[in-house]
Image (cartoon, rainbow, N blue to C red):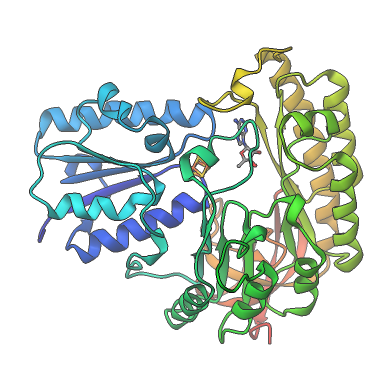
Length: 442
Ligand code: 5AD
Ligand code: SF4
C-alpha cells in the first residue's frame, strides 16, 4: 500500500468520530497516508450517519461527487461505512453500483480485509464482528480522547434508527477499557470521554462478573493522568444515584450531565417508548441538582413527533423553563426507515407547524441557557485548551469542566489547563482572560 492515499469524511455522532479514528489507525497501519483532497485520493471513505433525513441527503450529494471521481479515475476505491450503509445493506450496491465496499459500524475491520485481499468484486459486511475500539489507534493523539465502552442499544425508542444499525448492546470487557484509558494517558490524553449508545446500562451483560457504570467511572478515574472524565449519552431511565454520586466523589468526573429528554409530554414519551414520564425525568433532575447544584445539564429534544399537539409541545416548553438547561440540541422529528414511529399514520405534524414549534423552543432554550451561563461571569474556571479561537485567531479556545466553550486571551498550548477569569457569557460560550497555568485537578 506504500504511496497510497486515503480521504475520509465523517458524518454523525461522536461514536462515528471515534470509529473514524480507528479506521484511520487501521489505514495508517496498512501504509496509507491521509490526504485532504478526495480528488487526489486512491481510497475514499465515507463514514455515514442516518439519524435524520438531512443526514441521508448530505450523503447523497457526497456519493454524487464520489461517482465523478470514480468516472475520472476508475481505479479509485470507494468505501462506505457506518449507519446509513448498515440500514440499507445490499441495497447500497443496487442504488450506487460504483461503491466498492460497504460495511456497518460493527465491521470496520472488514474495510482492512477488503483492502488487503485481491478481491475486485464489490462486497458488503453487515454482521457485528468485534469492537472498533480493538483496532489500532491513530498515530496522532490530542489531549481529549474518546473511549468506546459498548456498542449497540437495547432500547426501543420508536423514532430511532440506531438499534437497527448498531444492533444489541454489547459491553466491552472492563479491564480492556481501563487498559485503554492507561494507554491514552501515556499518549498524552488528559480528558477521556466514555462512549456508548446508552452508557449507564454498561456492564449488565458481562459474564461471569456483572459490572456497573459507576464502577467503571471509579476505575477510569483512578488511572494516573486522567484529569477530566466525561461520558455520553446516558438514558434517563438508567441514571441512578451511584452515577450521580460518582460526580461528587471522583475528582475527574466533570460537572456536566447530558440527559436526553426528547419530549416534556408523558403521552408523547410513551409513544416514543422512552420508558419514563415527565415527572420521572424531573425527579432525576432534582436528584442531580441536589447532589451537584452547580452542574450543567444539557439535553436533546425532538419536536413534531406524530401525535404531538400544541398542548404536548407546550409541556415541553414548560419543562425546559422549569429545568433551565445549560444547552439543548433540538430536532424536528424525521421519519426513519424500519422504525415503529415511521408507521404511525396518526395526526402527523406538518412541516411548517413543526418548524414554527422548533423556532419557539429554540428561543426558550437560548434564553434559559444564557441565564444559566451568567453564573460563570466573575468566576475563575479551569479551561482545557483546544487551539485558536474560531472567530478570532489571536485568541484561544477551550472548554470548562461544565463543557462550556470559552474564548480567551492569553498564552497557552493545546492540551494545557489554564485558569480563565470569565468576564462575559452568551447562550453557547464564555469569554475571558487566562491568568495562569492550572495544575491538574489533583
Ligand atoms: N428524528 C429527529 N431526531 C432524532 N433523534 C434521533 N432520532 C431522531 C429522528 N428520527 C435525535 C434524538 C437523539 C439525538 C441524537 O438525535 O434527540 O437524542
Ligand atoms: Fe451516530 Fe446515530 Fe448517526 Fe449512527 S445514526 S452515526 S449512531 S448519530
